[in-house]
Amino acid sequence: MNPIQTIENKKKVAVLFGGCSTEYEISLQSAYAVLCSIDRERYKVYPVGITRDGKWYLYHGPAAKLADNTWEQDETCVPCILSPDRSVHGLTVLSSNKCLSIRIDAVFPVLHGKNGEDGTVQGLAELAGIPVIGCGTLASALCMDKDLAHTVARAAGIDVPESFVLHDRTDMADALSWAAGRKLPLFVKPSRSGSSIGITRIADISDLEGAVDLAFSYDSKVLIEEGIDGNEVGCAVMGDQELILGETDEIELHDNIFFGFEEKYHTQTAVTHMPGRYSRETAERIRRTAAIVYRALDCSGFARVDLFLTQQGRIVFNEVNTIPGFTAHSRFPGMMKGIGLSFDGIIEKLIAAAVSGT
Image (cartoon, rainbow, N blue to C red):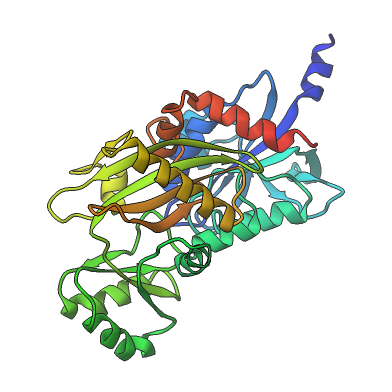
């Protein structure tokens, strides 16, 4: 076979990384792992980096420069955009004072947090008619908003924490009144943020206003939520019509620490048990609950459903990560490994499902 023809027959995948988000560095680590795992014999990969200030570049340099966050200084960076024009169906590259078009078969947003995991990029890809690897616009937006995700999950019959929503600081008096009747601790969090950024555990009601101010610095909508006396558990889910449910895990914490940013990415006291330290019957209940939440929120492709498990066996919905951490040591790949699916196998299944109709 002609080598040039072989290249042309490869499906083309744009992998998006970086982004205007507080989770920029996390995206680089996830994208590095993804780029190192894609089968280059099957797919032509176009890494597209988005800087903190929103500049888009087609990146031709080594993947290792994502790991140490030096990719942006590489001379191979060429300005580009994901064109909303369906006739382009891909990237418009601004090179040497001329525009070049690259047709793309699928977009893989390896972006965490706002401006990437919240439906914005997914909407752009869908407008362009390009398949998205992962959840679509609606699911991404719903899952990013913890208040709306809880509302949908509750309507689907899933237990959720009691909460109070603030849309601005003028709601503070009502928030204090609501909190006064609740058992401590409470958790104050931006409604639309990820990686536990901006979240405060409140053990004294006098700390509530400061925690609300912190949360408002990350989002214009703030959630005050009852604490659930139990450990966080999770289930990785893949698929659309037919679901693949991973093994379930459990986060063990010590000294009244909650599973915040430092614990998630710079583990200090947290221990992840996979499988979790509970019966198989409980594990199956967690898996069934995760599947109900996944479908209720219109998820597709893949997501990690996070729940709480109390000592009494109560399962309570926490949140859905539509683009969870994606390194070989992250929870999502770990749970899929628990059912025999390798990291490379996950990436292959996700890409193959997205490009199968193109």
